[in-house]
Length: 393
Image 1 (cartoon, one colour):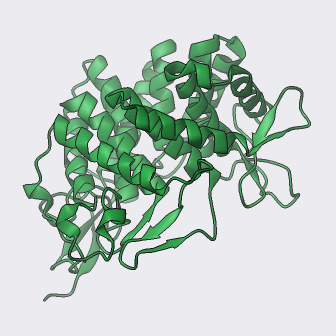
Image 2 (image 1 turned 90 degrees about the horizontal axis):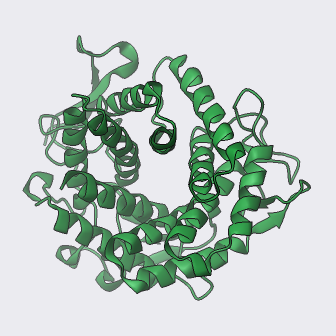
């Protein structure tokens, strides 16, 4: 076998900041190598895969609503030494999405339980009528409030009787208190005293903006919309000054949500620009059939493929609604990503290489070389596959 090499190749269509990682030689043999080019991709298959992922989450959900966080399918071992409340909130959100698509009550019941656990992490802030979400590392992160608000607003829309609007308002008030006049956000609310200063997370602001917009759709509080606009405009300007646009998929989703309320061409243009940068790093069949649809650098992983697809989906829907010709390129990238995502889900075909197939099936493994399954790996793939099924098939 030839050595597996990763090299940067510059083409005239890309500047140095957007170099694509291309492959030479043969890939390492993974434990469950499934040829992506042979996988059928249609609406029914994508929804079935998302349901299969949801079933995995239901099997690992505990009585208190939390989940068994990290599972090594190659060893049939759980690692519950840590937990992340942002990923928990995102997982609850994906279960609501799954219920919205399938109307299967078991997913709604699991989402309800997950929300009860999430609310157990709400803590009153020294700000009037505000709460923060305390993560298990003792920190109060902007993204935790954003994702908790996003999940809660989806609960209010789909299952109003089990949701609490007052909690949503308190989460939003905390986000508003963390925003500066220029639109930027403080990434942490001080709790322990050793929190990093300033805006230190790429994803937290987009998560926060998306949560605010979700509540605005329900409450029509102008403060929420104003804050979302200031935050989006700040991020657009600051990201345009970067050497290369970052893979800010949460911002892309926030821009789509904001555009539906207050249409702005810059929201479309920025989302598509990020999407095109993402796509410049996407492997295709010429790179390697096994890697096609995943993203460089290195061995492609299931979660970056899914989370980037969520952002590209937002850009695609905006482009299509605007009759923008770039929508075709985005659609092709999403279809390629869907193939890769399907190839990373453990199924009945993998019974021979996992010690406990009943437990592992439905989960999305980390990568072609890794058999770990974390709740956010499953969450992002559910969300992306449901979105692709709805938008493209």
